[in-house]
Image 1 (tube, rainbow, N blue to C red):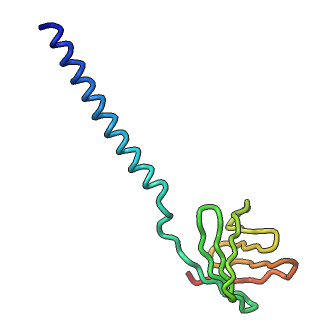
Image 2 (cartoon, rainbow, N blue to C red; image 1 turned 45 degrees about the vertical axis):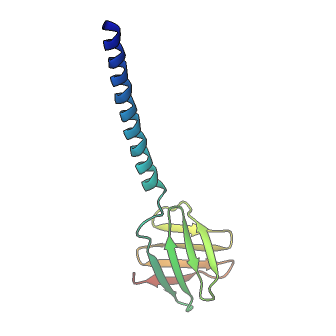
Length: 117
């Protein structure tokens, strides 16, 4: 009789352990889904520049996707900035604060841009 009781206690412990592991696995899956889900609430900003350049910019975690007037799409990595934003490649740079930005292409003079978004 004593052996039977010990056997049942082990089964109960094993079942409890199994349930706990199952719950933890499900919780881990839910967390992973939230973490790997696409970013919610991405907003597109329309900038109009002094030289009539129009930029559609979507800011993501560590880069900005810029669509130019002609439909060309650029991906600019985020760069360190003292204040505001700065995204750049060796040829293109977008930097700014608030609704104002500066757009630079190559060695051309930077142009001031603004968004109402």
